[in-house]
Length: 206
Image (cartoon, rainbow, N blue to C red; front, side, top):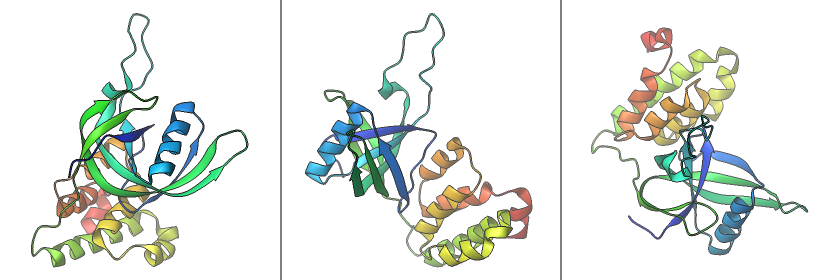
């Protein structure tokens, strides 16, 4: 569904997945403004990855922020706010639905965008397939972290969508790989993409 412009919080090399908890420290004035807005409205804001650095060569003009961020991201729902005496804040958000940016809006101190929510679907009749892929992904994840395997298995979500988020965060992936997983066509595709990123030995065992 489309909605009115939402605030965006661009972060370098960070991809937020649905269901994951993310702590953030708010110190820049523009993001203090963003926090004030979402606390007042109870609306989510968008986490998008900065894909291009602001570093410049001597003869380059700086690109606007909207030309340096990914065109899709994840809604962040505010769960906890701790305000500090200096006006900064420590907050905790939880990842919600994936979205695509339709257009940017720059009238605020922070970047905003009109978005289209794009929940990750499970193809009809593929529940057993997604569960099998999730088990395969979890086994591969545990194989990459044998010392933590018992703890990870204990805390791994049963839901395949949340298991994909869990694995995407814990596997040693690049930001580009995580973004590829976030942009998957459907849940089976996301699970298969993450399995393809497992070390070769772990893929062979599954």
